[in-house]
Image 1 (cartoon, one colour):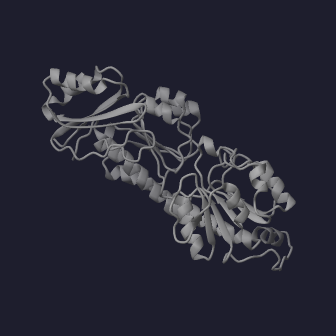
Image 2 (tube, one colour):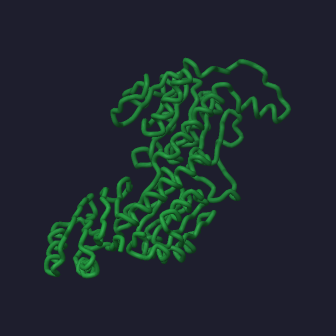
Length: 412
């Protein structure tokens, strides 16, 4: 069995928020056994106490890894976000300490797309109101304001992995699909890109948002944008809670300007299932409210568990950082009969020269070297003969601007 920088039984992994058992199984299959698997998130003080001895941490959306937490995480090597978003992690604070962050951008795209499509159909048929009335003893047997999906226009805001998959599924049901994205993209099937948000809103019977949480999307949908919706349109947000101003949406729903809505994400969400959910949308019969469960299917969570755990295992065993959201991306070959040194440093001139100088002065022969940088850090991977591994490690620790260094041992 390959020997890594530490005996695998000493590499501590903390998994929070009920991450799927598939992640635990993936770590076990790779030889990692020192795993703490918790069903909840942790408050900041408790998290700080635990993270001091942790090498890898896995989390979902509730756990917040901020500057204060990272400052105490002296042993932390990598973070796994077992979800799409990474806004719960201070990526710059992680990068400044040489900590790579990984996520799962694709594993739950189908789950989100299916939920949105189901909600669109339910809202076109007026099911939420009919359902609510039936529970109250009423009987709304009428075709008024009840429509088929076939022939209607679905407008997708953000044509990434979820938006594109929704596009394909919706078109197979007979929707005409339009999409708006800040980048020119080739549409799937017969989907057509439009040039502005206003055009999309004015032409669409159903609008669905699928944008990331970035400064450009914060509160991008407010009173002005909602007023631009086609009269009687349906509005769906399963992207980020910071994208839509809820109050004008609620007003438009009450006034009948918007026929119905489905919202899965909110500006303020309860921290636990025991806390009360509060929103201006509560009590509106033409609104479907779901508790941030767009990607929460058993299939998606199992796939996410495998995807992110395998990324962390690969980084731990091999040093490969492909798909990291904050780190220079390097795809690395195996390193049989060699010691591999991972050197993370501030991206300033002269570091590579200094690395090669100290290795040369110590008589250490380099059998392989790989470098990638971003605007903040450089990531250098050096393979050396086993006889020189410890000497190389000590030499590289003395290089100025070093953020983190570790050594991976090949099979002995």
